[in-house]
Amino acid sequence: MLAQQLLNGLLLGATYALFALGFTLMFGVLRVVNLTYGFYFTAGAFIALWLTQFGLSLWLALPAAAIASGGIAVAVDWLLLTRLRRAKADELTSLMVTLGAVLALYAAMTAWLGPDIRRLPPGVIAGGALEAFGLRVSTAQLLILLACVLLAGGLLWLMRATRLGLAIRAMAERPDTAALMGIATGQLAALVSFISGALAGAGGVLIGLNFNAIHPYMGESMMLRGFVVIVVGGLGDIFGALAAGLLLGVVEVLTAGYLASGLKEAVAFALLVAVLWTRPSGLFGVAQGRKA
Image (tube, rainbow, N blue to C red):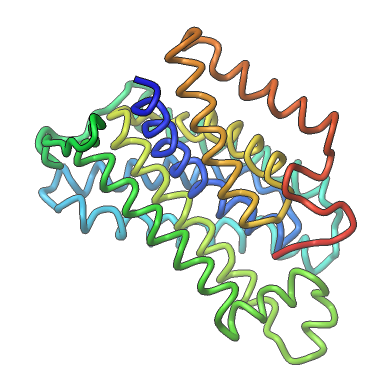
């Protein structure tokens, strides 16, 4: 029983980690807490829902939804934040702008689609499961794990093993110096927004698949978990976001399984408060440095 719960927690945590990767990348490079990030999560889930309703395979709907969410993120960033970056506005200004924007976006989506929960079409993914060593993993969970591994591994490869990743990290550390060295910081900012939005959109599809529940405000609750993950993992730390996402998933599943499902969010935020009290830079963060 415990082993199955731990496995379920790791699979859920993988989705949290995927969502938080884009969030921490956006913060670490662009130095903005972009609250519209949760809307990209919701948009990805709805785009995948519509595509599957038109008969597209989930294997194709997932990347298509991720790409579309990335495009939405680029458009929102260009409309809201490009001018603020040029004016070197502080982080609080960007936070307030994106707060107003996300409230408007959620309200518009709810007025358009309604607040009702939607389900993916029956049979969108095979209902079988694999069993080994007393553990059971559904086909949906296998897809979630595969997608998270591929996307997280691709991001880490991009950031650590390519010249583009080096340029992004240079921009994160010293944007003015990076611009003087010939790095096109405006184009990189758009690329980072696209990658972050695509990761959020993919996370929305996977969470919608895991719980088979899609609604306009699903990104709002996910943003709260995203804050927990990036703070616990260390602001701007990609490896920290991975570890903290997995930790949060395990904590939530164990709390729901052995205490009460209604307490899982309380325990998650208790973890956040405990980390802030003892290590304000996060469990894996370094107080004096920035990581891209």
